[in-house]
Length: 392
Image 1: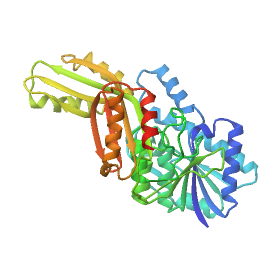
Image 2 (image 1 turned 180 degrees about the vertical axis):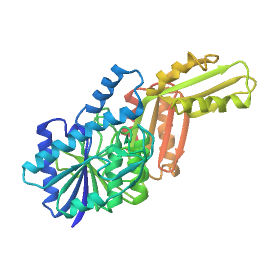
Image 3 (image 1 turned 90 degrees about the horizontal axis):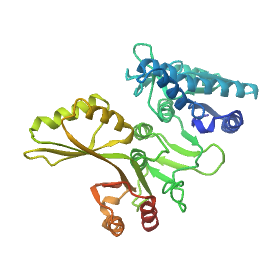
Image 4 (image 1 turned 60 degrees about the vertical axis):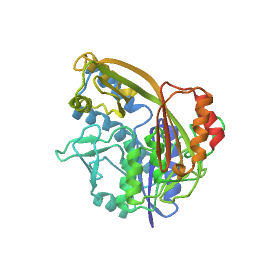
């Protein structure tokens, strides 16, 4: 009997009707003589609502207590699904992260899985139970509950699959695979049948919301076969594996959740940038794409995530108020597909499209599987559509 790991996202579990659809999907896999481990997220917008409620109590809630609070969302999901499957006549047991033996680092809110003691899961599988595990959570060396960050249930699923040497890890959501562009932005997208780990990792890192980037890193390291698919149909999904093909562009993604920051000061010394960098990191702001134009005066540019803009503005009003600053909402467009680096036609065509549309470029990055172009302002989806039409 093969061990199969199934992961279901929050949109697949948001009400009792959808829970029944999920239960029937699990039963289909179980009846094919598989041992089943199910990993689930919190239902619907539960995590967002819990964060909102906590911030009504405290502007900056204690991180340990936030992990304790947020972990309850997945516990509701596992217990409801287990209750339903047991009623349907299938032996099922729910396990929290710590009951499943998921041990993590001590970083509340962004913990990393260090190892999984699979004895409890294996014992339950040997007893022919369907095992339902709470994603997104574990326990640290202090015996405190930890959470893995947004999208962490994907990482839970792939890590369990790696630890159990599972034959397959299915990631189910409300979309049936990875597409050549965001279907909500582009009308004529096509589903991609197969992607390498590197291609999928590039897409995740560039803002595609199909898989959590850390789960792809784990899958690549341990050679876990992933298939993304829809909870609500039986269409063939997208396979993520170690197969590498020479190809053209497979997908194009645009990330508008970035701000280009410019900081200036009348004098400059080599230590100023280092101090600024460590100050930003200490406030959990990660500056990227740093460009240092300083000579006699301080003049640097870098990008930050849009979600970090509030924290950065607080620093501008306090610890770095001496700097003259400006910030602009910008776009980062990435073309992903193995072999892009060696295909000058792709690069020329992409730059030509941006030039025709008078798009001013801030930076260009070229890697084996990816061409990323940062613009100096936010660009419309029309640009994305033209790139998709011409290159895919």
